[in-house]
Image (cartoon, rainbow, N blue to C red):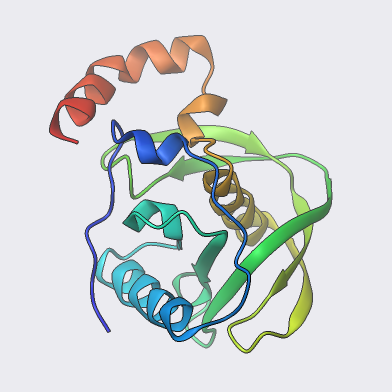
Amino acid sequence: MAIRPIIRYGNPLLREVSRPVEEITTEIKDLLADLKDTVKEANGLGLSAVQIGVLSRVFIIDFSAIDITADVKVFINPEIIETSGEFEFEEGCLSFPGIFQRLTRPERVKVKAIDEDGQEFILEADGLTARAVMHEFDHLDGVLFIDLFSSISRALVDRKLKKLAKSA
């Protein structure tokens, strides 16, 4: 379909709460195609609809970034059922180019969502996949990965954040 610009930090839309998808329409299918094209072009692991300017509770994870035999997974109206454990790893975000930070997130996640064909599914994931799911899920609620930074880490990237915000 189309590669869309990724909204960067400083754009107030990133702080908005996304709305549930009522039905899977042609517009939603086009959105999914655009998300897939955009995340591939950006060499990203995941992308939420809000990151391309659409306040719909939709995100994708490009599992081929982790496993070359895997595909892109669509999550519509996701719900986190449970999380467990802790896993610390460096994390970045396409809306924050050049900013990376070691963050602690749940090691395991169980998520319920709807796929692009309207079928409900449950995914149990761990490690990097769980991290990606939690990161993208946060976007749907206006939570950004910088919100998880310690005050010291936040201070260290403050100059970069101000520069990003000016260019938004």
